[in-house]
Image 1 (cartoon, rainbow, N blue to C red):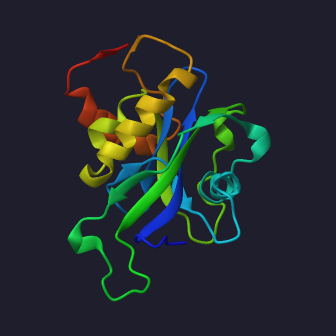
Image 2: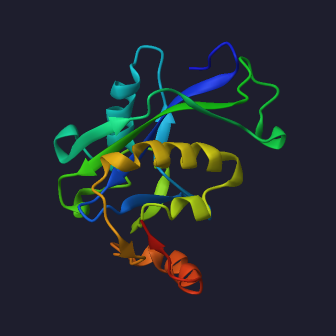
Length: 187
């Protein structure tokens, strides 16, 4: 659903494990990583869209997660000019998102990227809390930063060095790329 200002209503989904790491997913057949997200349909509330998208994109149910919280309001980003579909009506110039942070209650083996007829992701891995800010596409970075900053107090406080649990071998390329950078201690 696109509002009168041209922003598509959307939910962003951040899933944390028991170690405070976040689920980071790779878009299918692309070298682009992001948090799961999806549009809010006309008949849906953002929370209902959250659970629909959670199942469609990750195969998870409401019983396998606990909602820790959400952003207080909509966070917006504009699409770069070359990504705007100028021939479509209504014109969509960007997205406005409510971001939810969830704790995964079940085993991460329950994550299933092939629950819909057209999967959006083909790989995923756990990353440290602030890592997505180093990799997200430039036009989404401010929204990611604002969402992570606002939702950070809801995740158990922790201090740790960057480490990864790779549930699939597919994340090896990202790990190799990142291992060449310095290790940071996040607070």
